[in-house]
Length: 372
Image 1 (tube, rainbow, N blue to C red):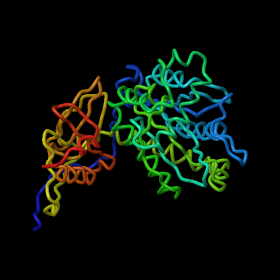
Image 2: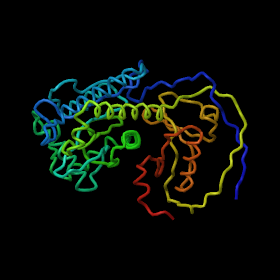
Image 3: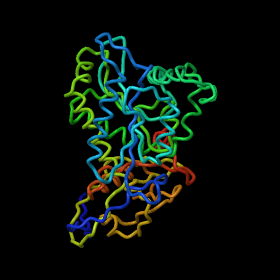
């Protein structure tokens, strides 16, 4: 049965009032969105091998510099590099660079390798390894610590060969997991939809370089240099331009999604037709689902005209960062409807979050429990 609801919502005038791009770790006197670009490997660490002579450290650096060059054209974005030439940089120092810069994002760029002709792009966030493939990818990247001086001291005895070593790695990054997954998803979407690259998905693994950072962080495996065709593509000017452009676009989309512009509006009356949801409810006991629509260092008045007409928006302050949510329900089916409606109002990159006993938990963890 169709029902018609009269809803007053707000349309944009010409003038946009931009929220500052500060995060909870951004400098108080800066309104720039800080992105740290990390070109994997370098110097005495060449990265993954290729029979065709392609060098991971060189490709990663060229792509990282190209991403930065395009991002720097945006006056609201500040770019910092962990390296700009062929030098070796310790993994813990890469994270330190990002932390001291009080960065909003950390993006580490790499190439993949395999003994077969595997191909495709994948993007990782920090997490406990759930299968042997993810563990082996992380292990290969983490073994670079053996090239560092005093690695046992710097990483407190971490063993890249032991799956048990990865369990503690996720604790520092748990707070940023949702944002990291959002960025990773946007990057993969650009690779897949814009460049038609094979999508190997968003994955979780225990990368030390991600563990060192205290902001949303991802590691991008742009493709396989061991694949004859993909390796040649990544080593080409065309391939590097396209891949860097996709990563740049994803970062800018992420910035827009997380730091939503607050607009000046005028009221206009419209009619929304709502269809009854044919899907059965999925109630999760002791779990509350919400739709995160925005985040800002500024406290915004919870009025519909500030949120594109959405009513009953709530706000949480977490370590100085205000997060804004739409919807409040234990019904996973219903919260997906809330998300669709938020997207129809302009929050196209909104995403679902979960809470248990008032504390934010990863969405996939919430969905592991059995609905009533």
